[in-house]
Length: 203
Image (cartoon, rainbow, N blue to C red; front, side, top):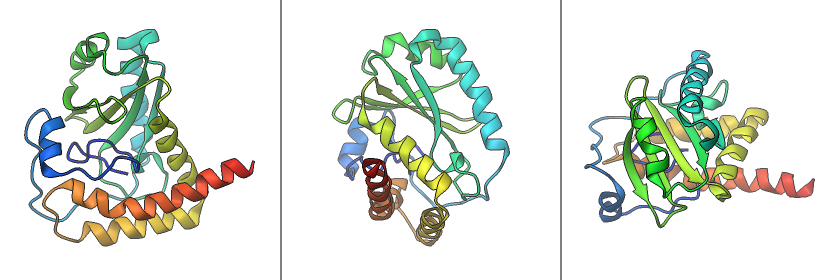
């Protein structure tokens, strides 16, 4: 799963974005990559940092925060990841930015992506610590997908190893932006998700 504002959704379902579309949905020009992608060893402090961040978000939004989850690679113990913390926030209507963005801005988050055509997704970025906060509306299937992917990797060592191997192989290549790296991971992500949903459907 993707972890940076250049890959705006942190989701395996998001379609590949052209440079033109990235510029259309991004608030500001996404930075270009100038070297290989750094993957850090899993840090047991990541969940603790997320817990503190989540407490702040819940305090700021109250009942408007319908669900808040630590997702992405930093949410999977033992998995190498870019050291950027990903959170998924579910609100009643993510397009109603006035209901939540100002309160999040007071916590240091900056709105970086507005994506009405894709689940009304919003991405807010915080620099210290480095956080991607993805916001979806109640009922969006994207939240279930990223949580199911996280939970599957937590409990299936073989797929966790496959995903890490894929990430490490791709991270060593040269990329113009993070979206190319994210797109290259998509076939493996989709295959893992297919197994996860098949297991769910099998009951």
